[in-house]
Image (cartoon, rainbow, N blue to C red; front, side, top):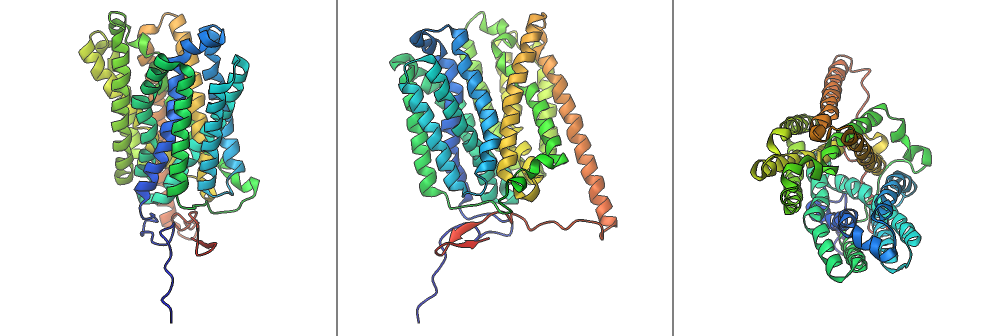
Length: 437
């Protein structure tokens, strides 16, 4: 009699009571390689834009359309492609996304004219948008409900570290060897990340129906739409000062331009720390409490910036606090959004989060430009406090309503809707194709 065959280490075969998969941290770190590649690509363009313009024979203003086109394509492609690929395994989707991303960057490095570079950036943006949304969703599925915040934070660690390491390194490569070598650098990082994910990630799938109407269920959920509205509002507040950081800290950067690089580095390092801390605290205290705390801290910091931006030491403190609190919003906000996803359609809600984020970036740039034009350059952080305070009020209102709803269901158990099993949506393929849930 032969011994029974053991299952491999896959999703659902040895999950904890919280629905976590063994080695979920290693999987989240593997996904972070991909977000590092995507983040480097997004952030490095600003550093090589002058050389791109000179090489392709366009003005810097025209070359800036590369950023605009990338952002629009990213925001549109992320939810659309996530909905179309929801029935596929997450590993297949993620590898296909990075393949598309690397193809777009390779084409960017190869094509000779500006219009073709624009088209190549659309291809890269489509892959980047699909990957970023599904990376967060996959990490959340693998980690289970109790570890969701930490898993998202670990995945987003690649994004924050790209701001500190990837973009500066890509800029150095571009200045030394030309901007096309920078794009080859990003392509190589994307290929490496794709290989790591293909080898390391289990064949995880989202549960639920596969019809298009079911995949789009989050768009019919009032609470999801409310979460997305809050996301838009708070990130408008976050990105007004960040987009115009050179204007906000002009008393320091105009005297010594090198301070701008220092402030950006401090912002990225503080943001990396804040992201990881917020993920852990979200699992321990709940995402609503973390969101209330960090957004309150951010509002206070922004109000104090006009008093702190006059000399380098206090400017560094203000930037560090801004980075810490700004990046502390990402993990808990996605954590909360995922918990509200109907039918466990996590990849679509995370893609909607990414699209909303890019919409906030564009809107904040427009609002900031109007404020500067109207002579309010010195009050940008005060202006940014308004949407953040509105976010605090909306988050508080949502928390109170959830508490009232829970009490109501407690007193009327017959009317309370049963909760689905935690992390029911995580499936994988084991033992010759048999699904394991």
